[in-house]
Amino acid sequence: MPELPEVETVRRGLNQMTLNQEIMGGDVLLERTIAHPISAADFLTGTRGCAIAQWHRYGKYLLAELVEYSTKATSGWLGVHLRMTGQLLWLNQHEDLHKHTRIRLFFAHGLELRFVDQRTFGQMWWVPPGTPPESIMTGIARLGLDPFSLQFSIKYLAQKLKKRHRAIKTALLDQTIVAGLGNIYADEALFLSKLRPTTLCSELRLPQIELLHRAIIQVLETSLAAGGTTFSTFLNVQGINGKYSGIAWVYNRTGQPCRICQTPIQRIRLTGRSSHFCPNCQQ
Image (cartoon, rainbow, N blue to C red; front, side, top):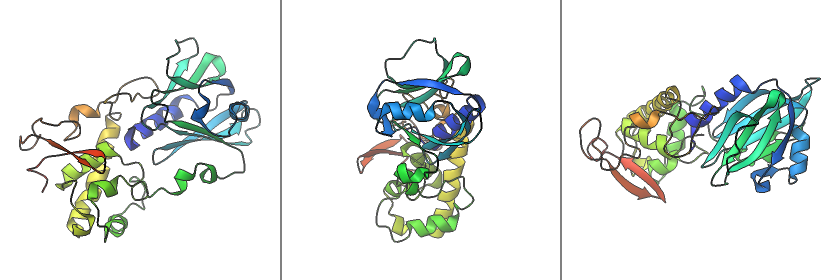
């Protein structure tokens, strides 16, 4: 958490609010939040005088294309990974400072982009111009296909899953297979696919993979339309909760009746992660 729908919700909000405005400076309140460069001063120097031309998403990573504000010359990249509890908030600078604020970037007209992160696992990068972002943000280079990409086909998913002797839930959390999918939407997609989390990938037949492929895209689109999921800390850039939790099929609904058959939802631990499923609908 946040997963693809939440990160995509943030990306869309940032593209609506933060583009083509000069970064006047900033403040780093927790230096270890800066993954690159090592020096917080270098991070602030690299971003000062820049503007954001466009925000992109790679799995759960956010990547802002930076240009020099006055000349529009390429000025590198600003990378963000929210991890478990990170929030990017677009605020007026005079608003009270949250105690978990880690980085502030000051824009013109008294606005700021504020990175708040309770658990402190989130990271930010400044990538200098001329340097490929994936050479520094190395997690990007290892990502599998995005579920919303044209290349994410039934054939691709079948090739990635065949001969793997591990639980399908574990495979879906592998970012080298499906970029951006996490615990919430893996559970939800498996419910729509009528597959138990413990089903081995090697046991899946092509019709089941076709159903799973469709379910992954369906549940992500549904969550995006709801603004993502807020179970604990997720907020969009305006500080608004996501609403998908109110319509979730199984995730975080342990003991509650299945929305299809009324059987109580069960929760198990699988490779250290919680998995929720309906023992009747998912065989």
